[in-house]
Amino acid sequence: MGNRYIKIFIICIGAAFALTMISRVADSVTVAKVNAETAARGSLVQRATVNGEIDASKKHYVRGAAALRVEEIHVGQGSVVNEGDILFSLDYAYLADEAEKAGIELSNMRLEIQKLRMEGGSSSAVISAQAELDRALADDEFNRGINDGVQMIADRRKIEDAERKLEEALKNSGKNNIDIEIRENSMKLKQKEYDEILEIIKNEGKILADMKGTVGEIFVVQGEVMKSENYCTIIPEDANFVFIGEADADEAQYIKTGDTVTVTLSGKSRALTNLEVKSVSREEGMARIIADLPDGADAYLGQKATLSHEEKSDEYRHLVPLSAVRGSESDYYIYVVREERGVLGTQTVASRIDIDVIEKDNRNAAIDGGFLADDLIIYRSNKSVSEGDRVRVQSAEIRN
Image 1 (cartoon, rainbow, N blue to C red):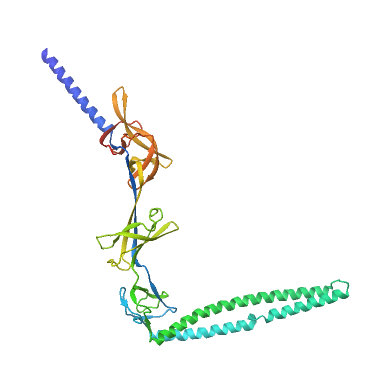
Image 2 (cartoon, rainbow, N blue to C red; image 1 turned 90 degrees about the horizontal axis):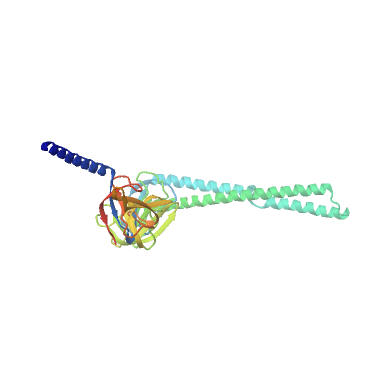
């Protein structure tokens, strides 16, 4: 009999243990494990990264008016040149052909302008039409005087015909003058091109440096006809290197002229710190940022670089991790950890509190709302959490 009770007791103990284990397993599956912390006092840090490249603060363009063939390039990017040094040699035969063509075109332009002037570019047609109108008006006035002020039909028709002729002469004269002006402007450009070719021929087909400095970009290719109006750039001796980059205007909204930034050059492990933003221009949703590099910076023209900027906000009373903020702009809220008493005893649950988001950076948000200073705010959980759900706090941090 005693053995029977012992068996029953053992079975009950085993069942209780099994139920406890099942309960614990079920609890671990259904109850969310969360990390929570109180809101902290502090500042937000707005960080921005801008990609760009190194350029010169001053550049002089060696320009050309004519598209000529480059036979030889005597310099490279970074070459130091003095005024009068040879930069490029041009194809002399091609140069001579272009000079002849330009001379013929100039001559034809002058003849066209002369022809236009002879066809009515002067005011002779206008003067003749005006004289005819004056005569018609004088005849009309005389005839009115001898006819008690009554205008004769013939006189009215003469006046109307003369007015039409004058209007047409004025129109033709204006159009003719515009045509002449257009051709004169074209001739000025062609004259500039012709003079440049003659100057290069005078220099035996050489393009010379017109100032002292360092060669920057080279826009021509050896053996090819120029595709740009510029041969190259020369960086003056008093120029320094600058960072130039572009970013989305929203991403760069906190960068302003005079701010201190850091620039990291491609291929360099050590960043250039405490650099000053020289200018910020914003247009069509983009921001263009220029920052000065220090004298003697180990950089080169066209080198890729990255600018980093940080802007610290005023201090806020309540900062929380971004992950703690839920909802959208029209309905922001957080979950705090609260204890509730029920038939099963005291339970830890998630409680929703609506909030306002004052400002945020890429890590934290400054918030305001009906939460308490010592409320633990949930910022991470192993599963989705809703209002009233049971939660188990894995770690909690009380921040000042």
